[in-house]
Length: 383
Image (cartoon, rainbow, N blue to C red; front, top):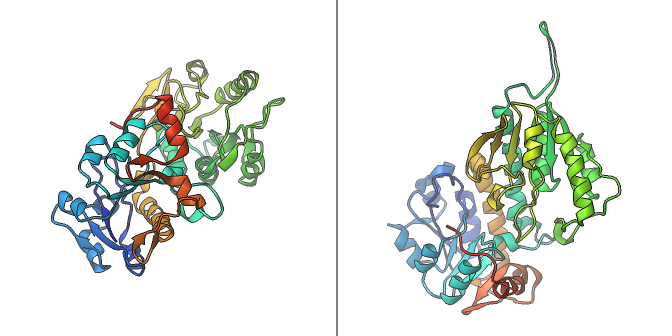
């Protein structure tokens, strides 16, 4: 099987889905790798470094696509990207299939066999394939660095001849993988760290990293399957909002990480909360790709509202492109080994991981929740 690695069109995307060190291991499983010229250069992986490991460099983007059995992407493809593919090819990429219903429909019509990396089940067996977790680790880390760079004060405490400088207070909203990465990074930078999550099981994890867990008395536990959170009742939302507002007003930096699969990100920081924050404070919104946890976030932009800097970047993992690509590539190795045998796709449709991430096959939408999203008529296509 020949796998194509493409250079992403977005200038902000520096990552690559397969790094040179993975090529030899894939070759051992009869999986050949061909790259578009310059595919890895923004992650500091040269064409020569790929060929040294046994990959081939195609003459052009169209050549690498036409010769491929399977195409690897690190960004969600556009409808134009789908049109450029051959019927019957396979695609491994983040798809957000519950939201991008037009994209899923186009992939099915083109008879593309698609695997959504964002739909890989978050189980023990699938941990080594879990792109969401590996990239969230990168995003949480860099979000804190962005907050520290934008904050007009120190993160750590300093004892100086000019007096003692108190540490900054960082509030982390959401204690999933990104949130825990942010907590650890903020602590290492010397901040006083508080964290909130609607899942009470995260309290022990938060406290093990040295942060204070923000508890909301009298609310239900919102833990759901796969480590995600379910939607709260109206009463619980009110209590949650009151608790967050109290802590947001005292925070110097807020890192937002809360997401709900297939839904708009929940609004945790209202415009009123932003207005109550100290001038010079910073909000870094990791949920910006799903419209953000802050009501005033503008996806893809950094804005200042009520004296508060709100960062809504769409490329957090890309800022650590070398390690983000390395982690993504290792995830993809494990996924490809799972999905192939003797260098060819083997679709065990009832097997848990395949069933969880296989979206379209044979001209049909085969993923149950994606079919439900189609019938519900929600979503659209990526721009």
